[in-house]
Every structure is written in C-alpha cells, then in structure tokens.
Image 1 (spheres, helix red, strand yellow):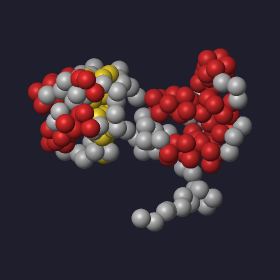
Image 2 (cartoon, rainbow, N blue to C red; image 1 turned 45 degrees about the horizontal axis):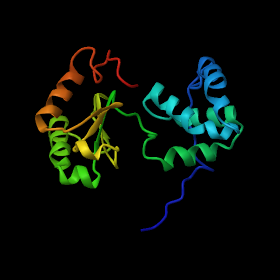
Image 3 (cartoon, one colour; image 1 turned 135 degrees about the vertical axis):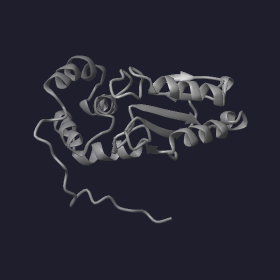
Image 4 (spheres, rainbow, N blue to C red; image 1 turned 90 degrees about the vertical axis):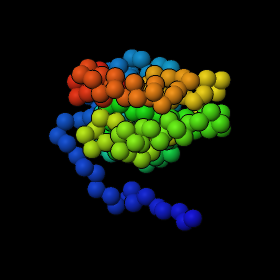
Length: 188
C-alpha cells in the first residue's frame, strides 16, 4: 500500500456566497462549546459534528471558516475531518444507517442486515442513494455487544436486529415525515 498525499496546498476550495458557519452557530459555540475546553482547539470535534449535522457533511469552505473561528490552521481541521470515520466530506443521506460489524455483531449475523440494506436501497457500504435519502455505513463497535446485531438509524440505536426489523425501519424512514423523506425531521 502506498501513501497518497493530500493536495491541500494547491487545491481549489469551492465557495458559496454565504458562510457555512453562521453568526448564530458561532454565538452558540462561544456560549456552549468553547467554555468546556481549556484551549479553543479542543472544541474542534464538537464543532465539526455541529457542521455535519447542519449540512449532512463538512464542506471545505466550512473547514476554513472553522479554522478561522478557532484560530488554528485549516490543515488541522482537514486532518481531523479526514482522520475520523464519523465525519464525511461528501453529503450523506437524510437517513444514515450504520450497521455494526464488530466481532459480536459478526457472530450474530450482521452480514444478513448489511445485505438486506444493500438489496433494499441498491447501494454498497459508504454510498448514498442517488436521491440523497439514505447512506449505508459499516461501523466498528457500537458498544451494545449483548444485543447484537445492532445498527444506528441516524442517531438511534436499534438492537437485536432482524431482516424484518430493518425492512420496517427503512419503510418508516421513507414515509412522509420520516428520517429519509425530503421533509423529514431526522438528522441533517
């Protein structure tokens, strides 16, 4: 395996007129997030989570804005956003299905769950449906080994999953007002 360098020194960042880090976000971060950390840099991960919740991914422009807000280098933000699997630089679906693939879930049949989601949605792990409704992820331990197999539908943990349960959860997410519907109130 070879290492691939990021072209961060020469890359062009797509920009939009309005900032991703709104005045309201910055005020909330100043009030609620920054006081929890001895140094501003410590607030990077919670702020990236907030950006991802708001936009379903972390745009490059937002990384530059976060860096300016925290007084750190944009490369530090990019390194963090690309190191942790929980962050995405590409838009994720309105409903993110994260199936645990730990040893306990593997022993309890997580592959049936992943295969069912793949079959129902026509996507592979770490892909998003063309309509932006669903993203399928395979994740490491979700910390619920005694109730395996488990998966997250957005941020809700579902335990002792069966193929039938997954079908029901996908159906619920697809209904008007469900997590994957265009007017759903699920995680952004």
